[in-house]
Amino acid sequence: MKSKLSMILFAALALAACKADENKRVSESADNIGDQQRDLSRAEGDQAKSSARVARESAELSKADVSFDSHKAMAIDGYQRELTVFASQAAIARGMLADKTMTDEDHAKATGAVITFERDLSNATAAVENLKTATADTWDDQASRAESAINDMRDAQDDAFSALSVKRTIVSAVPGA
Image 1 (tube, one colour):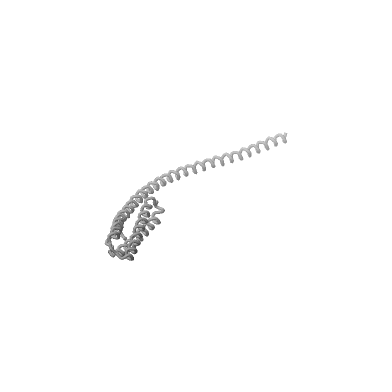
Image 2: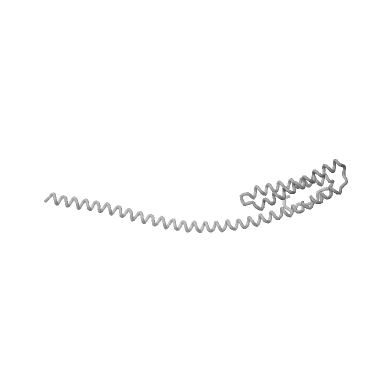
């Protein structure tokens, strides 16, 4: 009988130990669920904060894009106005070349200078036209190229009018030019 009682006691202890072990696993699982729910709540809160931040930054980016596009349009308009003046100067130089009586050597020099001026005007016009496709990332590089082309054109204009024995009287329409 002792042995049956021992076995029953041992089985009850084993069952209690299993039950305690199972309760521990259930408790750990419950704790894990609680932890996961808290993490999810934090993540949802972070996501809500993140979504609000993303929306705010998106709005700021949109404003920056509008500002960039507006300033870009004004800059291009200024360049185009300046180029319009230079185009009229190229036409005047071409006309003066046709009407001017010069030695063959002076005529050849003036013709070359006027052709260079017209070519550089065309290059500057193309560089300014390319600014229309510039993005915020490419603006500085493309604007630098346009400025360089415009400066080359100005030098060529000076050379053309010098060859025609006429001083340049144009004042640039773009600040700092």
